[in-house]
Image 1 (cartoon, one colour):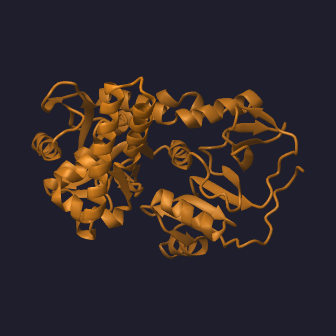
Image 2 (cartoon, one colour):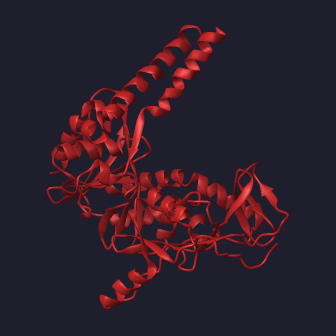
Image 3 (tube, rainbow, N blue to C red):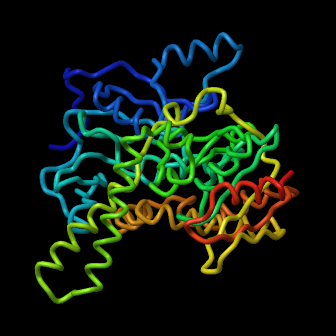
Length: 391
């Protein structure tokens, strides 16, 4: 079947908006209650009726901003019965639409050529939950607004000083944020921080606390619960024993099986907590200016080293880190281009240059430091080093 999508009665809700810092990120139409819960949990944001959002803007004497993305949930996608696939269980096309699949079943139609424009709308099967790569799609769409950008950075307010700590995945953004909070800072963002109206606003996704984070901090143990801290520590010990067993007798089937079982405990070494559960209101700031810039790098040497760095270098490296984070979304894009070579997205085609140029503009004139440290760093020492260099 092709043509218009079928919405159907189902348990669909009215149109709602998920907003951040007064700016709508996503409008959702005809989603089920479970769809809205899934999106709210993914973004860490509450849904508000779209009519209320528009009314607030009108009361303030303005017009509500268009969203970065719209998601319309339907009972039937407007795609043909016969699909040509791109990849084993990913993209598919029928000559008109590009669909993404889950478990071999098409669950959404995503017009990747339109993302970054106000009219971009995703069609998704009602009840399928969060469309894949939603945060990556939002970060891409943000580049369609000349005054906004997403930063892969944690951010805090340290006595009125806005500090953004950025780097490659695993470079220590969460550790820097936790360490700075030990110095009295207030939480703004952890994984993705958006620059809106010249201020930094954190996307309040769940914060991942590792077992070794909790071991270093009594207040973290209190927030996550003693039971969870003990379970995480036990999982870490089991994983370490699995590595030891694997090295001790790799050729013995029973030992190999025990080692594999123990290593699987590594997935239990962390807990993902909502921002509101982890940080009390007094320890959170809704936004902060960008006053200091920190580039984090892990090192094989001991100790923490801090040195000044040109902010343009930070922009160049962060732009590449952003491209890396979009690799799955870029995979979809090239699948869609394979299906429809003429459907180009000007932002995605030149994403590194666009982001680097915008980051250079945002970072210009901001004092910047490079901080390298061992991976399992002393969180308090890292926080002290950054705070001393930034104050």
